[in-house]
Image (cartoon, rainbow, N blue to C red; front, top):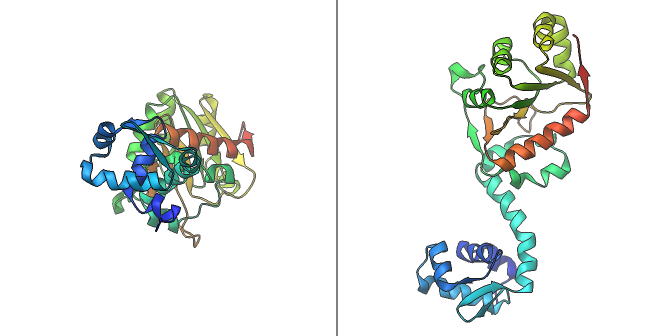
Length: 261
């Protein structure tokens, strides 16, 4: 009795890996054994199953995807990418609000790759993440969307500006009112050098902050209940940087530049 295709695709890590390996080009048995790191006697039954379900075909000692196999893999690979991203910490993703992400980027969350969740210790709750801060100093540019200010924000922003980093800060309407009321002088100084660009987002910002530099993307999200959460998320891959750049661009296009506070 044949297995269902869903069982065949998702209930065996070996079968999944075989299909992923064959997506680019045919492979012979020895190459498959090396890539999957599996003994021949364990791999052969999985290959036979994939053959009997018409997903792969054998020619001499080489295996390749069939037309049906290619069709399924075109749909399966993006899903597996999203699963890998979410699976790194499903508790984090499941408990936090993601509605601020536009649909075209939400469907491409696989681009974030494997991210790490950072839980700051008590004494660092009100400090910027040190790893992200240092990576920003070695970047040509930095874009952040924020709904709050660190207590030492002039020191933070100046550390980046002094390194020649082009800094773009997108703030919520509520935060901009606080800036105008309490920190106008500080921001006038920051804006005067031409290295910091301030924008006000014209709609609701339903997150704590997010941003990207040349090396990684960084997120601080609200819980699904709307409550603040100390946990942070960092994703350091080229795909994550590009994904976050597009997210920042989405918010920048819906923001108003500020030349003076």
